[in-house]
Image 1 (cartoon, helix red, strand yellow):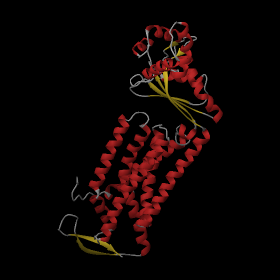
Image 2 (cartoon, one colour; image 1 turned 180 degrees about the horizontal axis):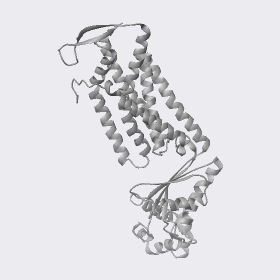
Image 3 (tube, helix red, strand yellow; image 1 turned 60 degrees about the vertical axis):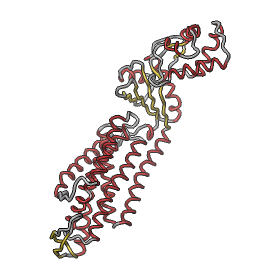
Image 4 (tube, one colour; image 1 turned 90 degrees about the vertical axis):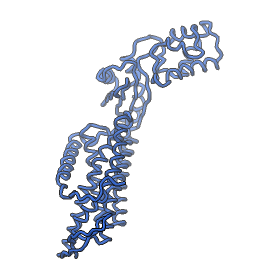
Length: 408
């Protein structure tokens, strides 16, 4: 399928606006990284705790942050998730010992500051099945509700299932709602109301990473990216020529640096999912560049006449439809993930959106000029050249076109 047929755009003649744009983005990103002391890493790389909290009525982020500051030292970040009552609370940990207590401190602090006080009662939105069963066992017997242990476990399991069902997000807003749970009689419900209360929030998930493990993961992530770039340089140098490999790797390194710089400017965290996106982009951008380079090599083998820049420009035009189709469809997919994928995929999808845009134009306006630069340097060392005019047959036509080729 071809969108563009027999195009003759002068891409290389319009390279400077894109080169200037790349320089501006690179410098801005590096300045941002320098001012902030490097990338903003997630807990995957720094160590700490990340808690996903769902509220019946979410308090302001500053109120949550202020409550936690009284108990927990270090930086605390509260991120509201759009169109939900959820927040993500993250905090670092200086060492593994501190990490062991930070989860409990976060829950107890939120409970004391943001939950309605119900002295002596169990928060049903934070309780486990076993804790609920232990709390109800004796009061049920004293209240004349005779249940076997199996019956008690079945009822508490049904209550937990009701609480965690889709639509409630682990929250029971009113204990009277339990009247619809199988096995919950009015007498049993009265006992539940006496022993429990419905708190304002529930913990949907907690992630913890030790500082030492985080540092190891960070170094491994850097090593993986560098090894990928080195392996691609070796492959392209073997498959084509070393100058092709250098041009392609510089272009991919350019894509990576700009993406990381924009993450710093936008104050976005870099975690394992972002590293996965960067590795995806390294392969995607490299593939896009190789397609153009392979067409250049084919045209040289077919003895297409003209200066080397004109052959490069013709090769870009010949692969333009493929570039637009693949990059366009991939971009739409990444954009959909960014808009509708939720908070978990936000960093991953943002890296893909940025990288696809940068990687697509770098294959044309960065990698190709670098290739021409290296070619001109090599040609200059080899000595003067002379021109000859011959017939060129553009793909898909039978008409000849006169152009000039530099012949050594």
